[in-house]
Amino acid sequence: MQKINSGSDLSAAIIFLENKHQEESEVLKQKFHLAYESIKPINMIKNTLKEAAGSFDIKENLFITSVGILGGFLTRKYVAGNPNSHFRQLLGPALLLGITTLVAAHPEEVKRMGRRVLGFIGRVIGVRRMEEVPDDIPGEPG
Picture (cartoon, one colour):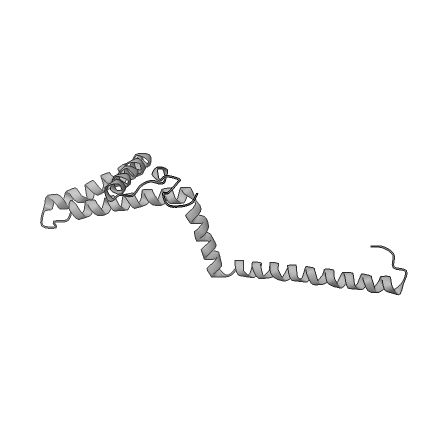
């Protein structure tokens, strides 16, 4: 800052510093409010879930786990479904272990098969993939 020589310079410097203090105070209040909002438990949970939902690895692992659980459920439902048959009671857990081991050992093949099945289901019900949707839709300006 410059050297102050007169009363008018002093009052101008005071006004300048008061305005600067006011602006810095507002910025500080805004930063405090943002920090306060970010440490609320509900916001921490939301942010964590957003980060997890955006992570490709988590989505991929969730898909593989879901396929494994679905395979186990279907195996238990259809193979071990009749409790009166001793053969089915023995075959069910063995088949369940085999499917679980297969899914764990070959996740890429399971993903590929899952994508094929989902693609087939999509074609059957008429859902088109994003690559197949035309850019220019008739009747819309553009």
